[in-house]
Length: 325
Ligand code: SF4
Image 1 (cartoon, protein in one colour):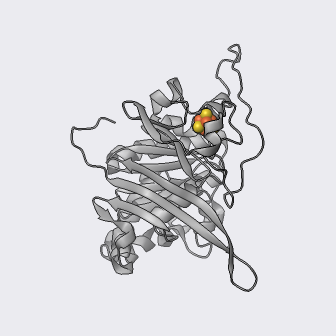
Image 2 (image 1 turned 180 degrees about the vertical axis):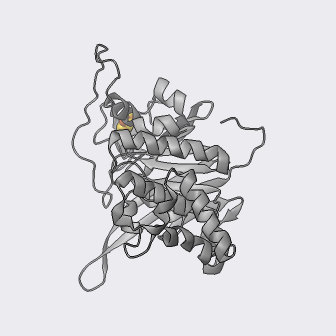
Image 3 (image 1 turned 60 degrees about the vertical axis):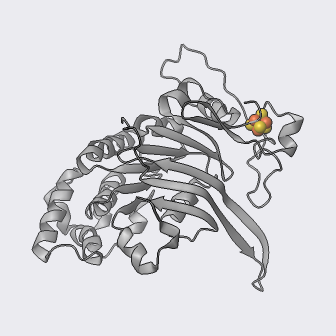
């Protein structure tokens, strides 16, 4: 994807924070889960931004908070310059036509008692789009675009495989002609061969529908193929962000280096040294002081335990939060 000079971001997340209170049996807050802490990113029209990190790093909470499926604790989410977090419920409902989400498990988000045609038509009814006849034509058109037969219209979710159900989830998002789709682990539950089919489909429809994607995944090798830029999160914070080629050619944060070293190389004859991280991910209720990665980092220094590293731009568009830089 090539950017024009002065192109404004379609989506701009500024210092997003999301904390969840943990209540005791009598309803008093006894701890706080710091799921997302002060994370900023931006996404241009037509771009795919891959957001990666281990399970529990806050990336899915980011996606859900941007859409206000859960309310933010702090920060801004500007979509075409309008702060999503300041919208009334009526304004938000209107904006959701432009902002859609595709979930990891489409089956749980597809009503088992409804026919596929009705499921895909529903967002158009909510947004008051078209007559009944126009809506049916649109559903038929979208079914074909996502690679499903017209007969799928009359069938029920349980009659489809995981990959087909993800196509249905995508059709339901596409039917209202959105500008941005947040894809939350859309292929993690699928077999590897099906994963590539869904990723290819996402790429094919991106240009036709002029879509932007925020693509959330725990697997760097999955986001590599689809993303223009990648952000790496750990324990609710952004560790590194770079254009995809640069991130793979010159990973600069020790956490990114460890994630990359775990990806098997296509040529088994080439030896690759795997970086093994010490211990478990700390609890987001009690994150480490200073650099939150210091309890597992192979390069930890004294300063890391006390001071939060600032995010620095080390080369054009390549940002790293680490005292080594
Ligand atoms: Fe490791 Fe220190 Fe860099 Fe954190 S700041 S990643 S602990 S070297």
